[in-house]
Structures are given as structure tokens and as C-alpha cells.
Length: 231
Image (cartoon, rainbow, N blue to C red; front, side):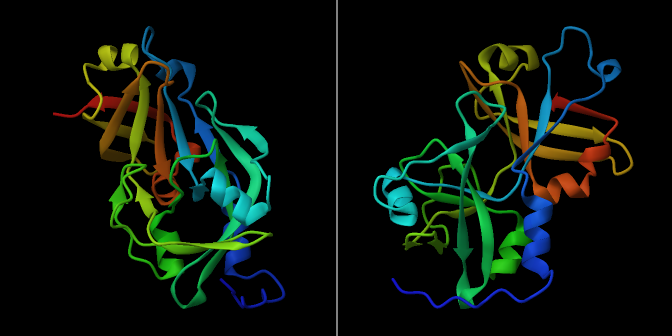
């Protein structure tokens, strides 16, 4: 498809500010040693900024025939990474987010994960979904240096969740698919409820919340974080 995209305004506009603030895909926060009870699994809370996942075919369409993702930075979960590649995400009425990071490895279906504020910027109303549950969700246009694709679905607000191993799940007394709460103490003390438990054999203990949630809780300056079983 052919797109005629508006030229970025000179100076520092809103999209550039957003790009600067949210460029870091992963920020990890661990409680001070004094706040980590002895024998409790090490907990990492990560802010997952807006990003997208692509299929192999879409990588080639956006970045050129034969292209593959280039790892830039390893993420906390083994085997996952932030790629050097970015795409422009275009929503209704040509509203856009100019630089959205691609995460690897590739997937069977392309998916864009945004925060609520991002959705407002694009003019989209997004459902909260677990990753991969994209049926019936809004679509968008992705633009890369070599081409563009139109997704008929796949844009979501990612449901807050916690990755853990089966051993971690046993420690907390939960199973895959259960719900937990994250207690953040600090200047903006907050409790995030209904974190989806995603337990498997290899995952490290890590909570994923989005940019809006992390900023609301002032996660950067949190005094402690704690996972509790939800009753």
C-alpha cells in the first residue's frame, strides 16, 4: 500500500518527547537487599514500553528481502531481546508513533503492545489482552524502511502479568493462570491487582507492567516491591 506521511515538525514535538522518554524498552527494578526476605525468589519488576512483535514474513516486508532482526539488547528473560529495528505505527486519521521498538525473536503472528496513553495518541480504543490473544482486536499500519503492512488485528494493551518458574509458583502457592497482586511502596504507594500468572519450566521471576502503570507508581523511586497471592 502507498502512504503519504506528514513531515515531522521542526523542533521538539510531542512524538519526539515520547520517543526520548520511552526509548528504553526494559527497565528493571529490584528491592534493596534489606527488603528482599531471605529465601524468597528474587523479584524483578520491569516496565515494558510500547513495542511490537513481528513474523518472519513481516520483517522481510518492512526491512527488505532476506532481512532478519538484529539483537541490540538482551531482555531479562533468556532468549528474548530488543532489536535494533524500529517501525512507525500509524493509526486512524494518520496519527502515528514514529519509533516503536521491535522485540525478538519473531512470532507466528505480528502484534503491537501499547499503553493507554499511546492508544489515545493513535486514536484507538484498545482491549486489555494477554499476549497472543489478538482475535477481534483493532489493527494498524506498520511502516518500515523497505515497505508497509496493514494489520487487520493485533494491537492491544498488554495485561499486566508475572513470569515465573514452576518452582516459584510452588513457593507462592499459585499455578499458571492464577492471579496475584503487586504491592509497590514509596512516594506513590500502589497495589496492582489481577496480575496474570504465567508459569513454565524456564522463566525467571519478573513482573511486566506498562509505562503508564510504572509512572503512576513512580517505580523508579520505589522503596520496595512485593508479590502476594490474591484471595
